[in-house]
Image 1 (cartoon, helix red, strand yellow):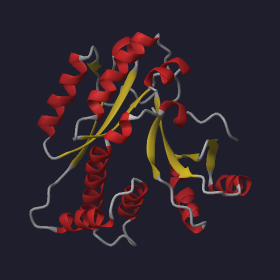
Image 2 (spheres, helix red, strand yellow):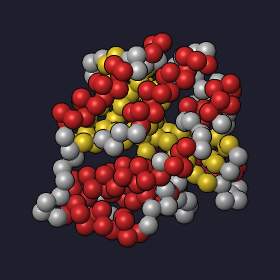
Image 3 (tube, one colour):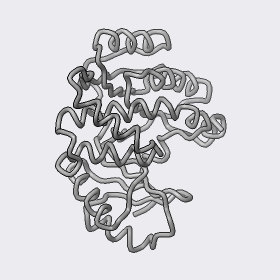
Image 4 (cartoon, helix red, strand yellow):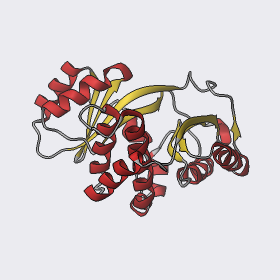
Length: 247
């Protein structure tokens, strides 16, 4: 079952990610706030909030920060965030899908459009990339000496499509409709993923030469640095040469 997951090859790994820890906290806090506002502060009855807290813990967010975010969601003057998405193409026809949580849609639209225009891309209409990306459940788990064969069998029974081991990390992939059953099984096994959620995985990737690929990733970096943007997905093939260049 291992070896054909696209998530670990698409997800870029480079040292700069550590420098973005503060931005990652900001994005997780937004998710906690919107989850608590929509479903209430009780994490036992609010599945989305439980997942947001789980991801916060996986990112080593202090408990006080988590509690403050939940409390902030209940305040009378709590910010209201709207979920919105953008679809378009980076240079050389690489598909880019952007998911946002924003309190000012006009600002976000202007910022995303400017990023695409400045870096040689162009925005498309919503739904234009539906044939390229599939929504999948992705669970990133730190291997803490688990019996991998047993865990893999448990995941298959719960509905997992793929089980991949890469160093000390395990990536479990499921169909969108099986996300809940896989997450429940991990909870039953006492395994807390470092990150879990529904991700947009390309069903086909586009291979570019190094310089062209770097232009695409410059746009991806600009988008990821925007506080209104939660996730950026693309179908650029992460070749060994590109991975080595990123370090």
